[in-house]
Length: 145
Image (cartoon, rainbow, N blue to C red; front, side, top):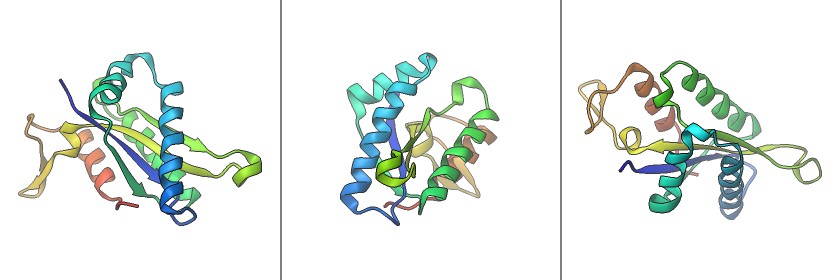
């Protein structure tokens, strides 16, 4: 059984630590509503067994939007079985003028447990594709919020 983590990239420049957690909860909820049926087994696996959430800082509204757009772009370059579920949460008009506050991505252990050895990313589960390596570098470029 595969393991997963939910990564949240938040607009931490504007939010307290508590609010970063709350915006992450919004992203989790948003993911449930927008999850493609082909990826539901991964989501259910995370929701039942893993439940680990990693909250990273994406700076501001544009940083959150850029994070989302980059993951969508990375998903478009690889095979379907390597697509990572991704979502974007916007606050409403009255609260924060539709500001993007969180981008959520469901990440398999194959990627988050990869290590950098001899100038390349290596997974204990076997060789990584070029697309997977790009996703790892993208995820590792963010720091905890």
